[in-house]
Image (tube, rainbow, N blue to C red; front, side, top):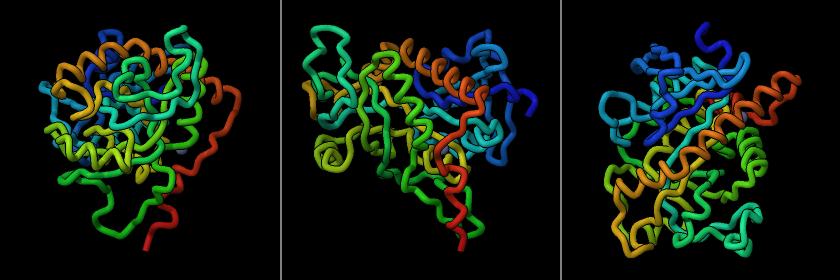
Length: 288
Ligand SMILES: [Zn+2]
């Protein structure tokens, strides 16, 4: 599509990322079989744009269990670039930091992000997921049997580039498994005790976005910001305000990461570099 010919990276963002849809952005309406999706296109450099899709599209904030994931991913498929999703999560257990950057004395000795210290290490890159949603349409294929390979649900190529960007910026982060609940309620303490045996972070928006992206053959990765300890892991209630404050605190860094990732993709494209993943072949051997 002409409007998207310079787009290098598509970003799907949730709470707090409407700021990317500023007056400098060009707003385009993308028609899909599942509904119209509003996409903001921002200039990120010479012949280099970023397309931003607001996950909770609409005048009001569409609740997580009502998000039209089919339309969002179909719009991303039409834009046809790698996708970076930004998600807010609660941390359920201690997670190892991939690298312990010596940012200052306070952080020097720490190698683990814990539910108590999440504020110091708010970035998390999922490498796998568990789906505990209940009422979401999670496939494009309803007329024929097509199985999708989910061995590496998040694109290893984009994850690798994203990790490189974080390392360049000396931003510590952790990796692991994302567990998606249906919402919109937060989890109970007992649920978190159970989920923490199987996953590291919990959220409501990562699935089926990731699996639909894989069905669509898109290279898709997620950058999660940890906004709170999960239920029962602190003295406080889990509140929407807490999530909002957490998102806002990290917003500037996330924007920097997004623009840096777009620059990396652009450089690689200019230099004729190749990606190292099989995302576009995820359904090739899945047809009965
Ligand atoms: Zn890929």
